[in-house]
Image (cartoon, rainbow, N blue to C red; front, top):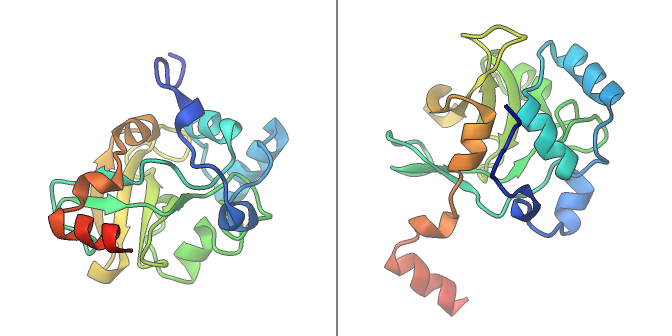
Length: 186
């Protein structure tokens, strides 16, 4: 099956601003870059992650919320993501960058269950990971939210990266009337 069949990836990414270009976006990954990043991280990247990063390698998506059935430190019914880590080493928020996956595990104490792929608006206090615990390092990982503020509690999000992408919704869907009024005043 072809990743993202029937899903329009051309409208997935926000127009890159200075922050995205400076901290997230790298050139599209070559086969050699992908191989080296996988070797360094010790995990095979999902084909759907690679396909998405070939459209734009990291940055901010237009839809930045994912519904949850259990509360997190962010909200009672969803998580929010800031940006997607690119496949590479050069940007601060790339998989192997200064604030990449290994940094989050080794320096911030996140559980070593896979690969950090999205940071969240909390500035490192929660992250989205590819979870390889059930499938092993060469399998198709699930996607989970890990909440550092709640003793690294793991909330399952999706059975695959593609399902995670397809399940993202607009953060505005969660604004209540009070939030809408505040936004209008700004």
